[in-house]
Image 1 (cartoon, rainbow, N blue to C red):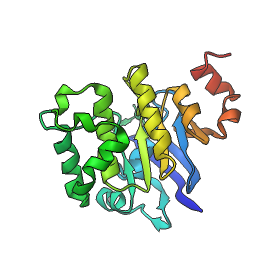
Image 2: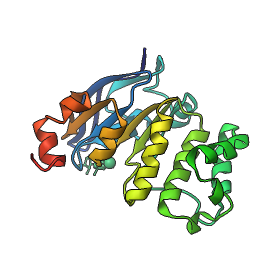
Image 3: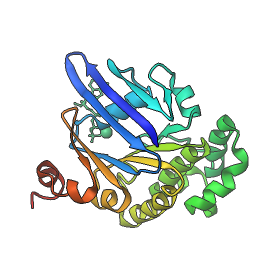
Image 4: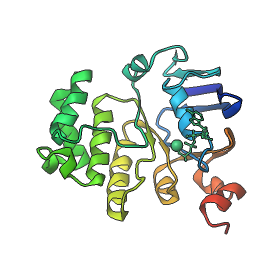
Length: 231
Ligand SMILES: Nc1ncnc2c1ncn2[C@@H]1O[C@H](COP(=O)(O)OP(=O)(O)OP(=O)(O)O)[C@@H](O)[C@H]1O
Ligand SMILES: [Mg+2]
């Protein structure tokens, strides 16, 4: 059963083609990484899927619905939720308040405690966001996405900027979450990618250059050059 279908998506900035006729289908239950060098078009592709940006061509279907012409709020209400590469929260508010604000939008304020439990951040709930470590802030951001009731969650570099311990924590949480929802991660950390996903889509210069199981992608020449030190 498919959950996301991307058909011939193209996005240009002026004459520059950032996403070039990209197509793929994701099945329910699949956990997918989108990888590729800086500037490959990964974030732009996600921006188009979630309508932060309008595509110049192509169509996107989510859970059987053509979402190509829908505004971002409608898309997130259908359960397609994305996070951003840079944490975007209210620093002076408490962790609890940051989460509750997200809950207000989705009618899930009653679930703040249980989401904090899943994330292992209950003991930080009454601290201001500025007082908690970056690793916890990233988990709060993830919590906000969870309170929006995702069927599919797209994470843009969930472990970027985190130290080893925080990375480990985040991966542990994501391994748990992938049991109950569709995850797509854009990620440069290949340890995280290989630990987490069933399938890897490789982009370069706006195009998909490989798409397959992690063990096959590991053998891909460009992937080796870029991520695995050219072994
Ligand atoms: N709003 C914009 N206007 C003009 N060019 C843009 C815009 N957004 C992205 N680009 C360009 O499109 C290309 C793809 O950018 P994108 O951010 O999608 O790459 P990425 O694969 O997410 O890279 P990274 O791994 O560094 O996050 C880059 O060359 C970038 O400079
Ligand atoms: Mg990016």
